[in-house]
Length: 172
Image (tube, rainbow, N blue to C red):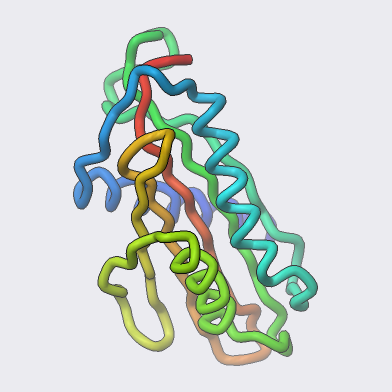
């Protein structure tokens, strides 16, 4: 069960990275470090998942981040390559949780909107949806958050994912 959750998270992370690359012209900055982007990404993600603290889970949440390269041909050995930080959380709400994944996403959406994030057009439908949000701040233009959920027939756990993608930098 835990392995499939990590696989699902990896697939979602790849799709989100592709979506961000294809749909935005993220501003790159050379005066911001990866550590700053990592810290802000984690703060944003944790503030969103905190909105559903106490809601029953099917299993423990998976949350974490990693450095990603804008150009797939660049690798760790190129210290001048442009990279960004992506933080992801995969949450499986219990089938009998007091909130549906959609209601949990609505709580998170409220936090984002109150903080000045701009919502993209939602994608998907009632049982499976993706909601994207964009914002610029002192660390750069092109921050992106995606909330995605899938509603299943009980007793299956209800899936919700949160991804935070930072602007790019070429500083370590």
